[in-house]
Structures are given as structure tokens and as C-alpha cells.
Length: 313
Image (cartoon, rainbow, N blue to C red; front, side):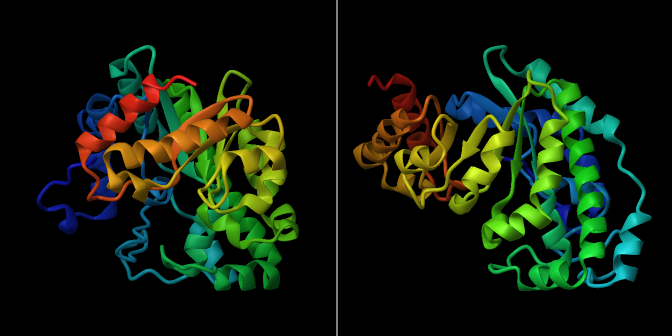
């Protein structure tokens, strides 16, 4: 986990990003979970807002790239303003990923990660990181389709360059996280979001593994599966159920992270159910279906990782 300096809240978002992109900081942040828990992969970064933060948006403190209170994007003028923002220095992202890859053991995987265009666009329209139904997003994309297209194209370019920089630095896997896409119907997804995600995935050659993590969007699994190698599955359904929806797909997931708080044999029993359910897919990447609770015991996490590695079917 990133250790913030004492004056973190006093720093501008660009100063915070300068700190995060320091190799000595970014390498430690990426590799600490591997070193502490023995997991098989490292994330180049764990902040899906990173691309927006690189251009100056602080959605947590609600500050825009000009240091002013952030206003939600709701008009043509708002979209016009975002188009004029200076592009990030992608070489710094590449340099950090290269440093992470050089420190990571050869048998471990480095994963480039970013929020998908839909969630980034929705964040800008809603002006908040916690909006369960995305009402303003749905109004905006239906009532202003041209502005929605412009905003999605801008976010797509940002995400694409961000992922490419990480891959140039040595990441072997890309993963786009799209937690809010679950609010869309299949028709809305097909018309207003799918093409942007698909085009980004298609930018990468077959040597790069492509993962979609759209937890809670089980109704969209069939729509997403044609252009990725691995589908992330939330804990709303079992992996066996997901395998029936998208037969032949490699699945990722899907332990409820809160169950780790149970500890010991109870946590292992929950993990065993996930492992057994994963046999329904041609291959299965074990993962939690969300962030770990801050109160999770690190020793329990390590024991659970060891249990999964040692498990024999």
C-alpha cells in the first residue's frame, strides 16, 4: 500500500502524482503485496483514477485541473474545456513500469491497470466517486450523444496511452476496471460504451493478456467476452454459473473479500468453494471480488494465499 508523506493533503494533485511516479515509491507500492503475501502478480498501480489524476483531476477532494472547485461536466462548454488539457508525460509511467518489472521476479506477472472509458467519463459527469445509479450519466449520454461521444473518445485516448506506457515498460497483462458499467442495459452498453473498450483491447497484440473486470455486470458477460482473454466475475454468482453464461472463457474471481475476516478454516472453506467452482471454466485465476477490508489480518491473507497455492483437486 502506498505510504503517503505527512503533508499529503497539502499537496496539489500534480504534486501527489509526482510522488507516486517516483520509481522508489512506485516499485515499493507494486511489489509489497508480492513480498508480503506471496501473490503471483503485481499491479503497476491500484488506483483506477490514476489517468484522470495525471491530467490534474482530484475527484476525492473535488478539485479540477486548474485548482478550482470541481464542477460536473454537463455541457458542451464543459467538454470543450477538457479537450484543451495538456497531455501527461507518458514516459514517466513507462519508466516506473520498467523499474517495477526489473525488480519483480521473472515468474511473477506485472499487470497494467486502468479504469475503463465509461467509468472515467461517468466520474466526470457525476462529479463524485460514489454514485450508485449514475443518473446524471444516463441523462447526459441520452440527451447529449455528441458530447458523450467526445468525452468517451477523450477518456479512451487517456486510458489507451496510459496502458500502452505500462506495457512498454514491461507489463504482460492489461486489465480495465469498469465498476459502474453494471448500471447499463445491454442495449445501452452496446450503443454507448462497448466500442470504446473494445478498441482499446484490440490495440494490444495477442502476446498481451486482456482482462475485463466489470464486477456486478453479469448481464454483460456475453457482450464483453469476445474481445478479452479473461473475464472478471463478481461474487453475485458462482464461477460455475458464469461458465454457463460464457462457456469456454477463462474466469477471474471471485471470493468475497469480507470472508477473509472470518479467518482460519472458515476463510479456507470459502476459498475452496471458489476453487471447485472454477473447475467449470477451462482455466481460473483466483482473485477476490473487490478490495480487501482494511481490518483484514495480513497473516490470514498470507495463510489463505498459501492454502490456494497448495490446494490439490
